Image 1 (cartoon, rainbow, N blue to C red):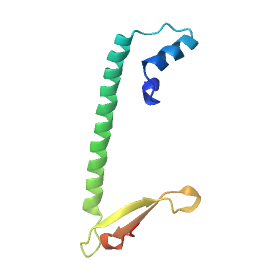
Image 2: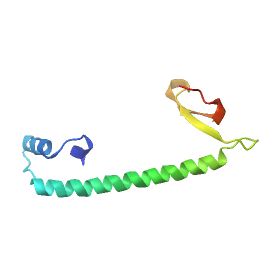
Image 3: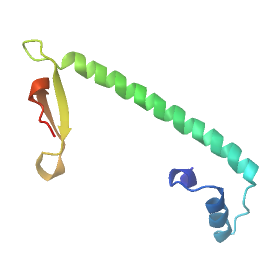
Image 4: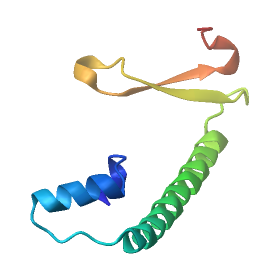
Length: 97
């Protein structure tokens, strides 16, 4: 998992294993484990994306001013000492970058 996380492949794992005096796995075993791990990473990431989308949808339903105009909550590091401070803005008030 660590080798995949830092973007290395079979050759780098083989070299790393030899430095630690660990017998290397075969390319076939590595590929099978890479596919299994990749599937787990993909599925976990997709679950988190869906969860975040549902949370955003719930926030959007509640984030309306007294006139019924939707607002956007912008997360910015404007707070003191690096604290994150949410800012509510109307759609038309967003600055153009």
